[in-house]
Image (cartoon, rainbow, N blue to C red; front, side, top):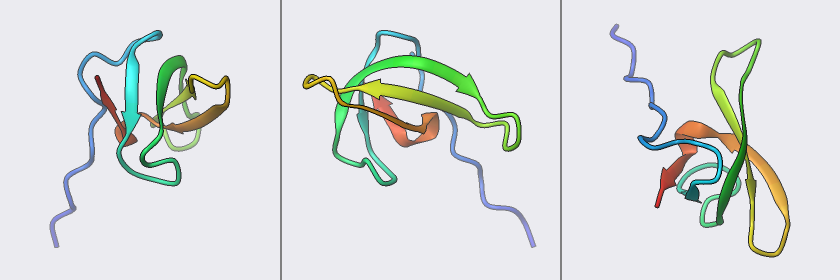
Length: 67
């Protein structure tokens, strides 16, 4: 049985980019990309997003759209 295609990170992903979360727990939130890290276990990129009110959260890069 073939594997499902893996979601990819958005084009233009860089620190300081404005993004909107389109999937996952934080879907619908937006802010600026801060830290970009690669997970040691799963190998996927995780990012920290800082909202306008200063709230920070982490999500997978594949869950965001760069604005």
